[in-house]
Image (cartoon, rainbow, N blue to C red; front, side, top):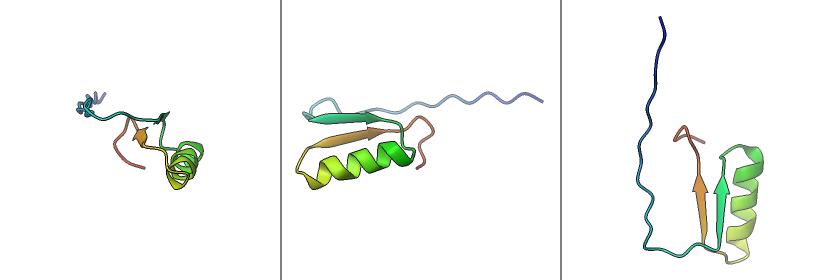
Length: 51
């Protein structure tokens, strides 16, 4: 049995982001947290919807 998953989501485009991080793995989450702590407006995008 083959399963097919289709993920759909909307990302707000009315906000300005200083940094966009693609991937919610350990490195991506760490980069997003570090940038946020330094005051940057960060968008973290993860394909599966779960970190």
